Image (cartoon, rainbow, N blue to C red; front, side, top):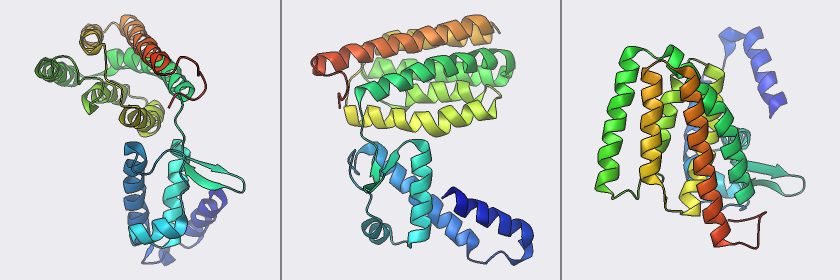
Length: 249
């Protein structure tokens, strides 16, 4: 896949005026298939561990092999697809250990993002973040403290802070890569939160630290918040299957 993309890039530099008219259409088709496959994998309509058959998928999505392979390659880069010798591409298999690794990575990276956001967010962006928190408080109250972890609002809060860090590479790692894996675990593990109200309170403290431009405190609060979430998930996973630590899905 890398060599193919390198070849295309080289040819585009050598002959930019002769780019095929179908290139834009092919790119848009690959993007559509990528988005639809990503959603199907995240939501479990393509089950974890199942093989991605190119003939079947090409027929299902009414596309040729070229854009399909490009889409699968992008999903592999996101960690949603794994490729093994003599087996081919498969939807990634979820494990409790894998989820814990994601939390460990998030603790470090999102702590950094919170510190940068406190230093770099505009006053208007902070006001928007405070308004988001007000909406989340209303939503949690309506759901009696049961929905915050499961719904997109929780990740939306984290997304806002990461996107406001001013670090494009950090944003790509977290928002384009890790958060799709987190959504996949949340959708398919089907775990209800037992700390929605606590998480909401922790979010509020992080926002207050950002509003006060206290980057050190914002980083510490974010790291502690994600650590608390990880420990809560660990307890739920252990309660599901206390005899297994490797594959808890």
